[in-house]
Amino acid sequence: MNWSSFLAFYVAVMLLFGSFATGIGALEYEVTAEGPIDHTPTEWNGFEDAEVTSYQYQDLSERDQRIVDRAIAGSRLVFRAPGDLPTNLDKGNFVVRRNGHRYLVRESLFFNYETKFAAASGTLGFAGLLVFRIALRHEHGW
View (cartoon, rainbow, N blue to C red):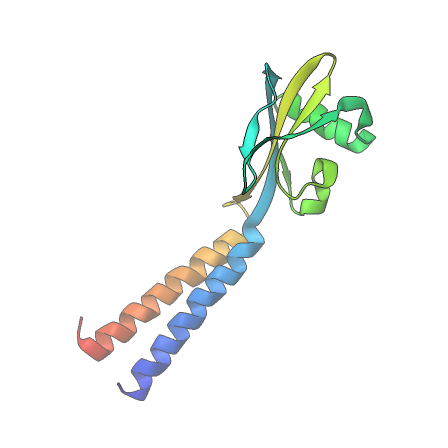
């Protein structure tokens, strides 16, 4: 392997690593709601199936009540930081009991393709694959 192929391979690896690192910036949290539901669902917590956490609507803060109200109304709410989520859970599901009904509120992490971080991640990834292909072609003639 000559030095130019090695350098191209090294640059490709760094571009792919940069793609991964900038892609983390495109991760965001979404909050949606389903309901009313008939029963409190269970989820696997690593050891057993357990009921998801349940909250009384009036026990939530005013901010969390507004978020839950919008989610129950059908809105999909997106947050950048986990600290902005209702009930301060990092992510997961919880049940809210309001006016005699139960609503399942889902909090999940997703890759937001509409951010600048996603565009940068895709560009760096494509450039890394291109440079990797050039290095292979130069070294092995592929």
